[in-house]
Length: 486
Image 1 (tube, rainbow, N blue to C red):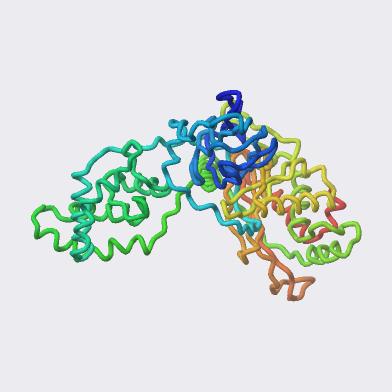
Image 2: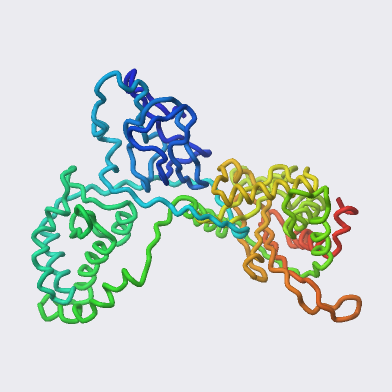
């Protein structure tokens, strides 16, 4: 897809590219440049979030930023112009940025807050599937001053019949309808909230700075709408119960926080629902003594050949799963619904689930089956570091075949993980704890954990799933099997 256009010999436009396979939209998380800044070919100008990951976008030419078409927090369709660059600054008077009216509509909205920078992902959870979401059309603003006046009057009544609230009602229509085509001013999350509650923003009385509609304004507009439904008679006497209950209704905005579901989190939700109700899940459990595995981990940390790489129990567990798949290759498959075929995979792209501030993602180690233990350790370390920095690319999350999710880092014993879309199995690893265990005929304190394997019963029957789980457990109990079985 072409991502830039020329409006003249002087000005060039950069469009939102498809940074993944078949993505239709992305949210602008942060601009790194402002109008007037000088940019060079390859310089990152913004960070966007797709349904798969956060991605930095470089500009493909030199020049001076003329205009940013969308503020931070705006969801933009692929192919829309997001920035205009003056590639010949100083050659004449530049047209006003407002000239790009159609694409600049969201610029009437105030900038949304940028996402917090602190990121401390840990290994856990599930991944994302390719999204087919489409951008929802925005509601057109409709002038309804009478409705706004009524809403303001009822709101004043609900606010404890305070006298100062009454004068604000006449000014509401003028503040609610800005000069730009009669479109009320509100941030994207507030617009989403109004849509969910069925509130027309044109009828909402704004209390924010410069006539901006806030969340509280939307909740306030929703409260009077609920009151008549509770009172069958429109007589004035019916208002009394609503006034008495008003504190509970108004306090909802302080007692609840509504978070828009979008980007990675939205894709996760869609993928998990699709997986849970498409693939018939079966989960099996096994509790195993991993004392010898923990000793091996300690020894590997002292091995000079493993210097500089991350060594932890997950490394041995990952290698154990790869050996189990080698012994039971039928488990590494996918279901082709269109052709009604089972697709056997002769490679293993091993997914490692990670929790990030934007949601759960599953980057995978490509061709993990071919890697030695030091190579696997290095790949795991790189994967975790990239996820922690929020730099995981869509390509790194595509093509997974089997996944590991380490819920044990939270002290959880085990769980019933949901399959990633298109994969046949997912292994959950519980916390490793010192427990009493019968060892060589005597009860001794041993390092014990519980494993859970979920698999697609269309592809994997009970016998095959049990063999894979039993093989993983046997290796963790006797790590020397990594040599004899590999």
